[in-house]
Length: 372
Image 1 (cartoon, helix red, strand yellow):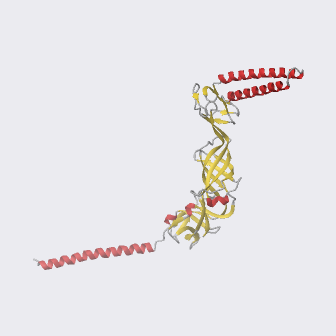
Image 2 (cartoon, helix red, strand yellow):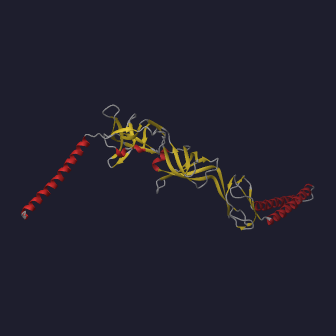
Image 3 (cartoon, helix red, strand yellow):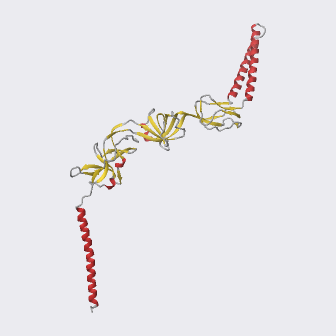
């Protein structure tokens, strides 16, 4: 029988051999993997690229605006009374001077008839007094008094006619009328709003810009507007610039006019406004997807020739950025015309990495507009 101490010793030896074998195998495996990876060349990373070329940059000022009818009013009742007729329906196109609402005018018509009759009597008396005066039968002041009565009667007729005319509300200009707010048979007071009238052929656009951009604005400068819904777009001109800056918001109010022949733009509608500024030639602009932003700054991977025929590598170049527009961004420093830059696939790149350009994607630069 093997003594206890000897058995313990043998167990320790066997345990040491097992542990040593495991450690040796780990170092052997790691060494073989490192040797394999050291001799392995990673394949080139597929990326899309764009050749930097100067473009014509169309700077501008972007703003948010509100559409306002060039001529738009709330139509009100001029004289109180019972509504006898409403001669329009919602969204009718009405002509200037068209009768829209008729208020009961029986008393005014009766008063007009009485005033006209009084005028007729006064005219007859005046003619008689003039004849008698010419014959020397009557004093001259009698004819003068009769003539004064004629003028008084005429004034009375005009006054009653004005009151009668006020019973008919007419369109002050041609346009599109809104929803009627009164009903036939309803009693309405003077000043009651019965509809809105909007001339939609020409629209105003009110918007604001920061005070820093005030110097770029000029009267009659071109603008364009577009809506959030649909594909409506219209061109116009600046008609007014507020000659003061709002002390609270530091914004300047601007007004422009745009044509609206199709009638698709309505007062109160939200608009995106762009004030066009003179175009600039020779600006370096690249796709915004090419720019990598980090705590160290903005950078772009530039494709460089590598070792071997047709081999390509990338160099991370830090750049200075300028204005933006849509999918483009201006590069003021760091790139030169003719540089080939990576526009996608940067997440798998590092400085000096090998790349292959994927030509299946068209990344041609077509947009040169800017936000200024």
